[in-house]
Image (cartoon, rainbow, N blue to C red; front, side, top):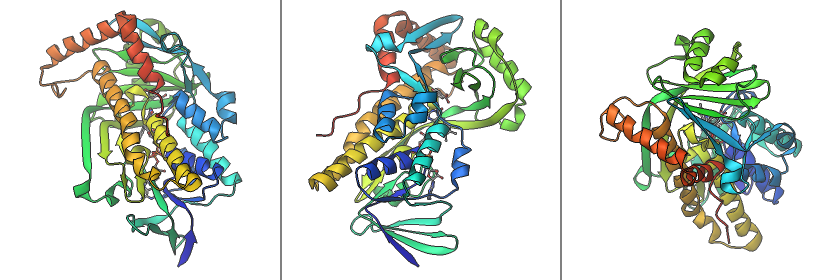
Length: 402
Ligand code: FAS
Ligand code: PHB
């Protein structure tokens, strides 16, 4: 049995865990990461693509921004197309200068992994039987790696282990309130080395279902189609995908579509989920371990970033200023911004997807559709409405930690 001592034990080497680890290390707060799978496996997951300004600023604060600033693309706006109409949400104008950065989660994760490795920080990849103990009074983590049992003794545990991780379940069930909405459809995503149909994202609402045209670079595109929950990725040949996407894109974009072999194809289920509280004793839940949003608002990764920012600042107050109370404030502060992201993602999903009777509004499909069309007409035809969308899409401000 090997015993390791550190200040913060981080469970999970996804973007939450890696960004938190980098920021803590930069502040002189020692940490180790315990991850279930290999780094290569993590880099094989294709997920988010849009970074809010707050995330970009955090990556720069972590000193891991060189490639993001060189290869990322600042987006000043995005389009919403529905029933033959098309509106551009001019983020820059409507928010007085705020924008978003288009740079893949995979790339941010790669940059953070490389930065962690070169700074010599400890990451236990391919760890199994990870268990959290004594989170109320004597926090420590036990796990097995390469057949050896290891114990990490620490002051705090950051549960950055995603929706299916072990951390959230460490909070006693009777002490957790879990809020959930599972959507009656999923997103079939395709990544292809083909030029994007547009310089900016196009969110499409059609009678055939939702579609999103996104990208990773001028030569790499990311597309999504709303599909039934019962659908299987093996039902979708590349040809069938491109044919359906063309039917859902606005005509000019469809005419520009360059098809090619998919280099990744998967179906992600959509849910809204929040666990309250986001902390228990010396355990903090961060990112997907605490909350999930439907990707319609591009908030998932960005809410993880604001959790990281809040926890990093509060732990600095604990270690640097001797503020013993600081860590107890995490959940309350983090949840205020989480619920903003949850609501916006739920609202965008209701507005842009095609629901059958299970739209949870208690209305029949035709009536719900008419309400949502009026919602879109109002918000897109009035600058005040466009400002509401723009402000939330660039991300609500991070709360100041005094
Ligand atoms: P992650 O799930 O990324 O990372 C958690 C890590 O913990 C993983 O590496 C996992 O292996 C590890 N782990 C799990 N259990 C463990 C255990 N017991 N012990 C040790 N380690 C353990 N967001 C967007 O903004 N836009 C999108 O388009 C988008 N698409 C998505 C598609 C899919 C299929 C999924 C699942 C999510 C998507 N998201 C999207 C949200 C996504 O980007 C998350 O918000 C982001 O990955 C959150 O990062 P983490 O909190 O680090 O969690
Ligand atoms: C993506 O590029 O993967 C992406 C962008 C915006 C979203 C969801 C996904 O809202």
